[in-house]
Length: 251
Length: 226
Ligand SMILES: Nc1ncnc2c1ncn2[C@@H]1O[C@H](COP(=O)(O)OP(=O)(O)OP(=O)(O)O)[C@@H](O)[C@H]1O
Ligand SMILES: [Mg+2]
Image (tube, rainbow over all chains, first blue to last red; front, side, top):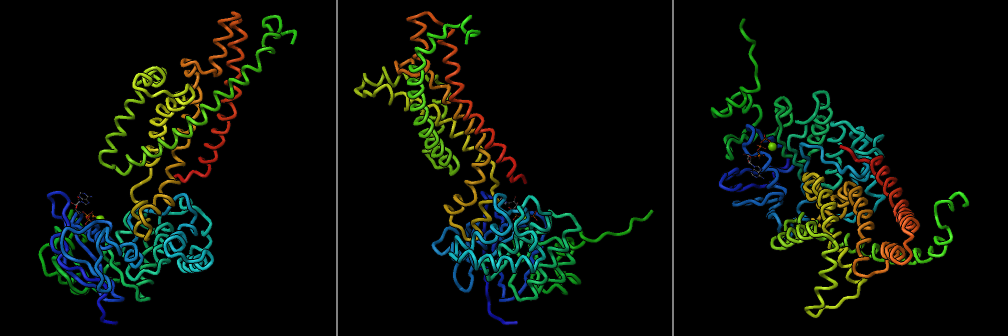
């Protein structure tokens, strides 16, 4: 794997009112690396991703993509955002557009690519996630898992350098989780740089190159998945992992 | 015709039908401009509220309260009889159009606002994170969805405002209502004059009402329904 740093977060601070949600987060992600962010509910995972693509303005610290700062509301923001793809937990397809339009709208309007070229790529990508037949359907006609796969394709069609995933399977029925995770695994194998927030621990372990464990807005641990899942260093991480294991009740 | 003539003075109706046609022209003209400007004012007000622009936002709230809580006739009297006292003299037509816009603007604003508010915040965020500028996101993603939700209320407002134009007879504009009142005053042919008035409004409103229903049905069919 190439060892060029693609994304750097340095001392990131984010407050909502009096509440400090991110309290000096630092880490970096190399090109082609998959970083999985774990942590209890409310620890600031979503906020971290939202800061990275400029949906929230940071109150301190820096975020660098290819060495260039990301400043919410900054001049370069529109250009920087195209380098960052994001998929949210709630299905956020545009309900008034069909699947192809959902995917090609941004490439055409934002990147001024030709309709034909955008369509061709969209169809190829849809084919790869097994949804080519649905290209003329509307979002409401798709299942949750299908919608999330389209949302991933929509982000990919902008040729991002980094993909951010915020619990993209959390709202799905269990039988649809797999089809979405498989798409993400394939992306990882193709060398896409990704930051993934998830509650699917098996999946996290399988896909992660590195794990970032957050608690109350600070990085508690940063390690490899092998080390994190088998021998977590902090008490908080141990407690967190324990919430995912069940013991047989004694009768 | 003979059957009708037992109750109604058909000759009278035929004689004065052209007056109604002319008066319908006045009603249509005032309604057209009043509704057009109402839509513009309403859209601007709703946008100000959506973006929560300080100061302007408060001004819009005051306007909406004022507009919704005063009768149109009072607004017209103010424009037609009140403003000349401070040196502003407008023709009855202008007063009628301004008055109707003042009233309609707030109703249209509410219709647009409810549409805008129905679009989930995530829609804007995902558009933004795809690289759309805020304005592009509004135009491509937010407005079309909002409009689909607003259409039924907008149509209802259009019909409401056309009916409200009957009030402009109060400032001596020769609209349908005025002609009917006039004929009753002169000839005491109340039944005929009122019947023609009702028919005239029906002819104006029915096609619009049908069109609105069709439009709504179509939208519901296309219904993006989540
Ligand atoms: N727009 C906001 N305004 C005020 N507080 C907010 C806002 N967004 C998030 N917060 C607060 O910031 C904290 C972190 O929220 P965040 O959504 O980042 O957590 P999370 O780790 O993603 O949690 P979950 O696992 O439940 O998704 C929470 O306490 C939340 O209440
Ligand atoms: Mg979250």
